[in-house]
Amino acid sequence: MPEYQRPRSEQEFEQNFKPKKPLMNSTEAFLESSRCLFCYDAPCMHACPTHIDIPLFIKQIHTGNPNGAAKTIYDMNWMGNACGKVCPTQVLCEGACVYNHAKVKPIEIGRLQNYATNQSIASGKPLYQKGASNGKRSP
Ligand code: SF4
Image 1 (tube, rainbow, N blue to C red):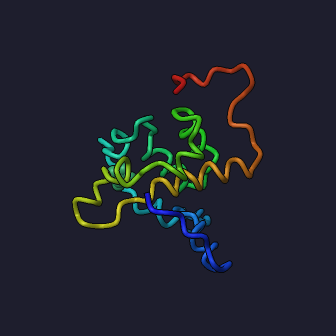
Image 2: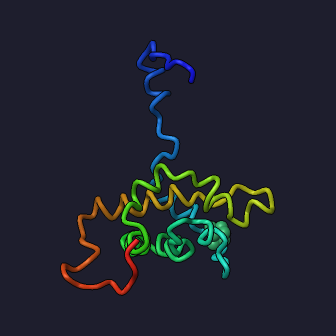
């Protein structure tokens, strides 16, 4: 394993710790979600180990409902926020996105997931009622 090189300047430090998937703003999320084709067989969803309904949460983001999108994500994956940041999406959902077949950049699903869950956390609105069943299976 290569030895870790200590950053020699603040600029190098910032470069080393720059997020690989920076948080989207609402305009970026709107534009990126507009690219989704909402495939009926959604290969992205089948490639996700937690089978999140990806086209649904992307549509919810696009229609201005990030809390709904976050709930769609958390219904299947309680670690949805962390997974949006660290999942190897390039070999999972994004690797299966149909855009790859046309040699077009796949939908940035991880960043959209991160956007929705971050928006929901920032809103402070509870997504689940205490003691109520959401009708879906737990991950
Ligand atoms: S495969 Fe790509 S375009 Fe199709 S639903 Fe999934 S994210 Fe959208």
